[in-house]
Amino acid sequence: MVFLVLPLAGLLVRAPWSTLAERLAEPQVLEALRLSLVTATIATLICLLLGVPLAWLLARVGFPARRLVRALITVPLVLPPVVGGVALLLVLGRRGLVGQWLEAAFGISLPFTTAGVVIAEAFVAMPFLVISVEGALRAADLRLEEAAATLGASRWVIFRRVTLPLVAPGIVAGAVLCWARALGEFGATITFAGNFPGRTQTMPLAVYLALETEPEAAIVLSLLLLAVSVIILAGLRDRWVTGP
Image (cartoon, rainbow, N blue to C red):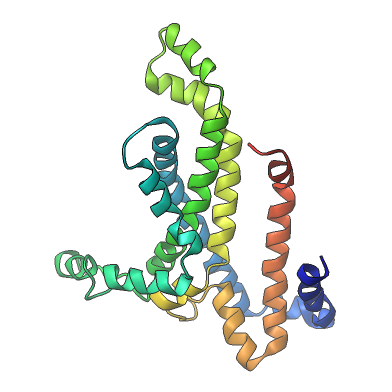
């Protein structure tokens, strides 16, 4: 506990409490916070759109490559974020496998843009959502769905009226964890999207930049991210203790 808590306590001890409010109100801090909140929210929505059907496929459909698919989904959890950023550049960069086609056909260039930040955050955060939702689907009582089917309900009605309410807590928990991971993303973002104030400079990148020029500002930004993390974990405490 000392090993885990002492570094966090160091932030609290060294924080410039007397000037905390002034520093939080600085334009560059507010801009980085706004960009972080917007991109993390959009990334979470993308993860919900793509991750919930994928989790349902893994939990309810048996196919030969399911273990391989599950392993590939969890790769971003163990992959160094910088490597993820390099991989995104090789695929979506201007000379990437897909990026060169996007630029030639539609004039779309994703690296070093706000959209690139969203893609980088979604890439590293989606496994948190998929794992949470898949666990909730596996823990759901299938007998309720079978009972609805015997009463003549269609698959869509069963999913909307039975399955979705059963797994809603897991979806919410996964979405919150996904959002928190996206909010704190650094390595893939700085590699794929760069560090441009007002466009790609999120809170973690602002912390990194401030640490080199103004350490007290870096402490203030770190405290803000720490507060968000504590609030999220406190809100999900029961789910971590009791499971899905």
